[in-house]
Length: 114
Image 1 (tube, one colour):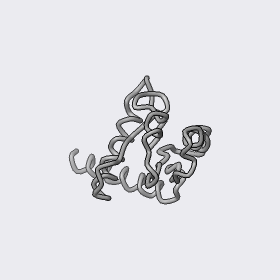
Image 2 (cartoon, rainbow, N blue to C red; image 1 turned 45 degrees about the horizontal axis):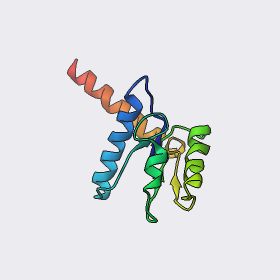
Image 3 (cartoon, rainbow, N blue to C red; image 1 turned 30 degrees about the vertical axis):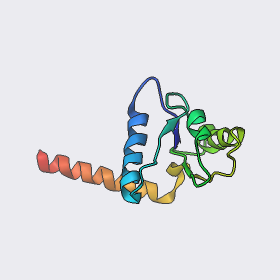
């Protein structure tokens, strides 16, 4: 699951790991891994270990160079161009609704706590 990552802030890594934990639980599988473009574990290293029954989730907000090109390029250069890529997930139409629902839940919680 390549994600940009950042040496400046851990927030994108934390979001990717939280998503991976939820995916592990929902699918009841143990082999969900996170990988990043700019911090360890690096996507190039993770891709090298992918098996034929792998799927990569591009955990980016949009189709920019990272979300739209880098993930597929890394797979191709590793000889794994056959591995399907889902995403970038930020472009999925239902994501906006999920974000809105989460914000509403948080705001409702803040209003109840006040």
